[in-house]
Amino acid sequence: MANHSQRWLLLVPILLALSITCAHAISKSASKMKSAVFLSPKFVLGPGSVENKFYYNIDFPKGHIALKSFNAEVVDEAGNPVSLQETYLHHWVVARYYAPKDDKEVLNYNGNQKLQRPGYISGRNSGICQKGLLGQYFGLGSETRKTATHIPDPYGIEVGNPAEIPDGYEERWMINVHAIDTRGAEDKLGCTECRCELYNVTVSEFGRPLKPGYKGGLECCYDGTQCRLKQGFVGARRSLYLRYTVKWVDCNSFIVPVKIYIFDVTDTWKKSDGSSGLKLEHDCKVEYEVESCSSTGMVGDACVHSKRISLVMPFGGYVIYGVAHQHSGGIGSTLYREDGQVICSSIPAFGKGDEPGNEAGYIVGMSTCFPQPGSIKITNDETLILESNYSSTIDHTGVMGLFYLLVAEQLPKPVHSFYSLVQVRFTSRVKSQTFFSLP
Image 1 (tube, rainbow, N blue to C red):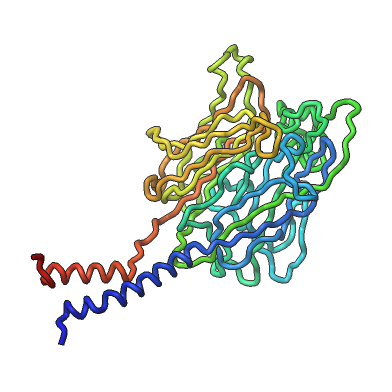
Image 2 (cartoon, rainbow, N blue to C red):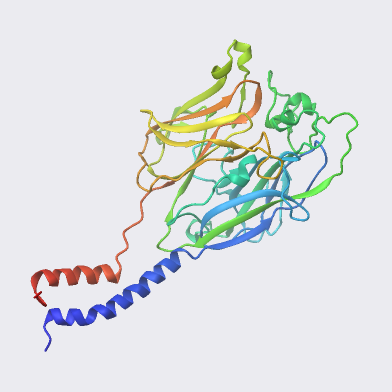
């Protein structure tokens, strides 16, 4: 009868074959990427007009899945990409919500027609802004075509988990598209920055008078407003869509979920006492104004407007991905630790031509951060610093300083294959016995 070592030697080829099959199955399961392309409902814009609607119950992948990327761009009826020089994409955002299963209505609302359906439940992200804004899962602006949104393996944004969906409800998705047609505009930059004087707006979309000193921003370029055109300019109205591409994988034991956090440099957070003890209340204003440095007598390199805020993190975990969102005039945003260590820095890229994705003078992309998994860990209640920088050679209205961060609460667990088990067992036998000797 063969001894124990000889029996192991005879089993090695069989177990190695099994290990290759299992390893292949693991790889195949972890990389079975799916992709789908959808169109938003049609919106029609004429020169100077504004689209800012919220489209509910949009087409979206179904099931218990892990989202891997979401990209979008404005296209015409023929599917051709539309230049930012003609239609400026101020922003688009995609958010999750829960609706009763028997409610099959597709809902489209502009900002003045808030969603009032009874029983609808928000499925917002894990971010710290709490007053209805910035609850999206994905969202970009003019930088949409050249900003990476992919999430590296084995991480993903888990959605569609039956355990998280309330009884009697189903998971649905909403998309908000804010686009400004600048063909024939008297002041294109002013239109994209929503300067109130160019829109001849004195009240908000809800009919309230604008705040004293408010020069421009979202309150002046809401759905249906009109930016001033050059005298005598005439242009055709045209039908447009937001074309969006979603990539995902089915959820399995190899996927490590990440949580979404969106920070806002305008956040006016404060501590308050509640029934459960001390808590943080966040009021994110989303936009702010950059005043020209000429008004302060500064010139040259001094013309940089820097806005900073410290934020106490209500979470902990490993940073997997980071990117900032800025508007025209932006020169970069950085998230720091309190000691000055950089967690992620995101810098805009400006176009140099006329074709879609390279429009001169427009931000056409933002650099992203993909730290080595495990290299950057944020601890619970750690204080971070968010900084947003803009050029202040001229005034800018309605600018944003947002930062989007994906955080994993844990790292992937080591995978032990049959091969590693055989190797350990075989090595231990080799150490204890000699099977042959060299001449």
